[in-house]
Length: 431
Ligand SMILES: [Zn+2]
Image (cartoon, rainbow, N blue to C red; front, side, top):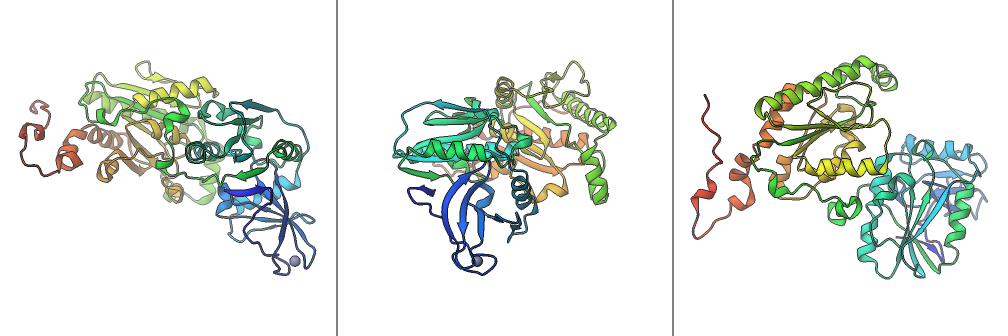
């Protein structure tokens, strides 16, 4: 935790002009940015600098108050750029600010700031809440979050400060908001800021505490059901690639992202249908659904179409219920995979070479034996053909074959064995 009050404590920062150690006088939270107000006692320059929370834990940026120039020692243009741009366009416009009070706030407060411009970043920050609820009983947790995450607030939060700031404005530097947060923190003697890890450890959160949806029971993963439940996670802004991007130029890749032609969405649809058809060949009673944002292409009636044009809380909860019923969720790499992976039995992710640097940041793993986990989580190139993807899914659905050989409970030496247990479920001979 970073102490904000009664005395702000920041890691030492050097003046980029004269190398003297900067002194920090105050903090301000302008939106997603948690900043310290820095002053150089030697050359009298003034700066704002990131406090170590979220991405800034790894790459804190310094901004010159007068010129607006940013000092980015880590070469993270996207992160320093957001700060520079938001400072240049800073606003005082009041925002919708709702307060939900759940319990009396103690004099020691931890503030968890979940504001961000990326859906996945906001959600991952929120998962830090459980640590403070469970491990910091002497402090009250106040969560600062965007409206779209309100439904995921876990029990045990003392207050939620809900800011009406859409994701597209998530980098905004808002002095009104900074003033509002500062005033609201004023009455508390001790205030700490959560480090808000970008990727909280799987042992530190239980997804059910957030979504109120119990994940797929892993003990049922290998049940040789006649009707496995498979869910494809759909998005229209990043596709199951129709072209092998390893051979595309950088310009072609950017162009593809900016304007995805309808014919590519149609091709993705054909691939999803082909994939589902291959599985249906093996499992005629297959329960196959498509979940996600965007409905620009029709799906055949035998596929459950749970897609939406626009998100809402109730729908997202229903989607989680669907993930939790799913033996497997399949989708393209991205924050769209966070909640599906947190609830489903297993995952197949299509990942392009340009996203390999983010592997596996979008997966909320469900912990089990190491070999068993390798079996349940698969990452394949995003140009994988639907037939090949179906082969992989079928192998994963034949989990019992793997479990007999490598599952921990089947590799334990015993005094006596019931050899029946080791026999594979009967499948009928090939004809
Ligand atoms: Zn200086």
